[in-house]
Image: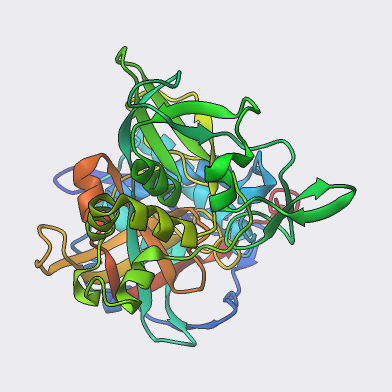
Length: 409
């Protein structure tokens, strides 16, 4: 039965009969999920620092963006997430769609959005077994110069996914390997050094050419890019798999070797090291044997990067999770202090974000990556983020009453 409520929008008249919360006929309460490697501790919304102050109307819009994909099977199996919360998210999405249709607007008031989330979800603190806090990093969409043909300064090829790359041991994000067939037997796919030394050259896999191998390296870490061509066009590139080799964070290597102090580590410091000594920088990059491939995306310049869920990412509202443990579309509240306004600043970051992406380095129940947008400024902020904080998973209250709609992708 549809539960109707009457609420007052911020600065506006009462909205009677708005379907903010819907208890499904034939459905039921969503059971508390189990996340391997973590405990879920029930809390109240009042336990979330900054919940009442957050602009939840923006989170509502990002959530509905995910809703477009929640009930669909992904086009590429390699980016599927666990279906743990899928049934409940389908039901919450139905309530969100009904609310937007009833109001006739895409973005409700902050008060109404808050009421929607509080009536349709229950918050649980995610407590990883290895550490009570979550570990947060930041990512962004780089913007670099490039050319469609090699020549002059542009001699670093960006490769498309090779046809002989076969993923093994499951999907190719958050783990899994990749092989190729050589002399009738499976062998590990080429690593970074082999590819940079020409293992894929001459096979027609070159998408575009860059000036700087350091730019390419950071593109691979971020999983997307905007490549600005000489004629003004912008080529949008997105993640299309990797070579199956383990991801090694080069920043950690610099810290271990005493080359960069831990409290000064950032993407800017990594770049500075690589640019100051190109040969040492190349050797450092090659210690990360993982190598990412790209594909051209048909996106206009005003559309954000596309996450693994298949939806456009929203700066400050989208985050990447371990897709083996979390379901895409899940709302996750983040509480952390970050250096947002400067390298030494301590700015509270307390907001509701939506799980819409993943990455090979994002592993574990409390490991999340915050998306900050496109370009140099976003990159500067994202590169400073390596912080401990707290996260809370918002679990849908109700499950979908139709088993066919709730089937696993």
